[in-house]
Length: 303
Length: 158
Image (tube, each protein chain N blue to C red):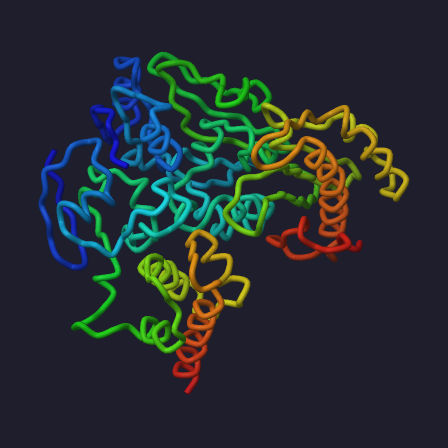
């Protein structure tokens, strides 16, 4: 299927040039990996008059650890996150999430920033960035602002980005305390499927936890009630059961082509337990290596 | 806009429109027919090509983007008209029936073996999760890759 919509193409070499183009052309769309926008243009969902290819902005191509912060530039692909030795060493759960996105040929092009700009509810980056309280770095010709992840998502395919603005990257404050995470994703089969439901658990050395769900609401959901319940308590079967009982009041899954809302809810409870137990065991240094699919483990994961 | 690129080692210069898709340009304008149009939305892998050494879905790449880049298709894997050892292995294991997925399978596997010379069965399956085959059930494809990786590693050791 060819593209029937005509548009102009620009590939600026400098951020200021990109911002000038964005402010001048209101019908412009930003283009990095293209794995979402090209499909949207083909299907007539997006009809930009101008396509601004930002792949010439080499300063946005970096993964950086500096002053206790991790920053991921707008051009960093999921393959680059997956292969980064510094991410593997310091925040391996980022690689665990990256590994579940699409397939290799998609990950070689698709970017994490593009993922949150498309903002479809089943995106894999949502629960991860919610759990890490990410900041989205946004620039326009006139100003630069940092948007907390909780203000970023406004609904399915809707974000806080305004006309004329460009997302230059994502910033995460690395938890000072020792931590370990686990991402559980439910697909219809192994490999290359969108999430029916997903959960990310981050366990910190002071026995506090962060829990976020994806694909079971219009935007990623941070489960603060569960975090408060688990906080500084020893994880027992009873405590997990109490936390699971809170989940129906936290997530709002729908029935669609991929799964029913009942199944999604049930699996949120199952996957929450597995992700929690896996994160706790990883924190203790005895957990399974990152990258395994805990959703697939029959009988759950032993701690 | 005029773009310059290398395709399978040969230099090309073409005038393209912004809306042209790389897959369509390769097939309809350059006449390279190994990348196929299957799903046309990046899910099936039949349009896989190497863009600067990395697999991409050519149905999701604009032709205009490849200015200055290097593209390799299945046609470019062969040296002096000879099949690569990987292709020989696919042949020996009878890995294809209709062959529609073949070029994508071979390019994805070529990328895998370059990065990971001794992949496990799980790693092979994970790599091929973006390349759909509706004939073989994948078993002869996975066997061909394992076999080739083992042979290559034996040669390196000895």
